[in-house]
Image: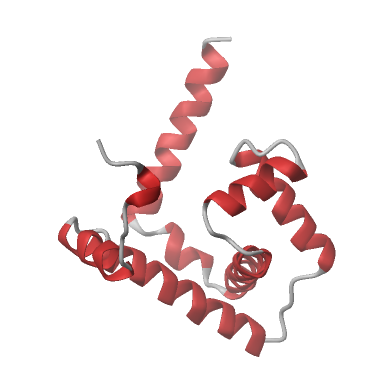
Length: 136
């Protein structure tokens, strides 16, 4: 057995593996989409406040089971994540969310509510509410 600290992995190997497993293009698309959306949000004058960044960090830690600042620092170190990278991730997430909210406010909701997938989703939500209420 080879010790994990003696294994050398090049970034290209990770990229190649991801491509072979069909994960690269979806992940690349997600990254491009997030960057494009965050840039558009900034162009619209949207910003992430310090309070929103703190709330985002708190939520991220909670969702990922990081119960303390020390646990978060250890997780970041283990995963090679700098504070700058983490903050950039949070800021991008907040900007994407804000732009989505802005788009929803401006959208013609009827156009989307008439979409078959939305009608099915709403139907299923109504059913789930009925089931939950009926089984209490």
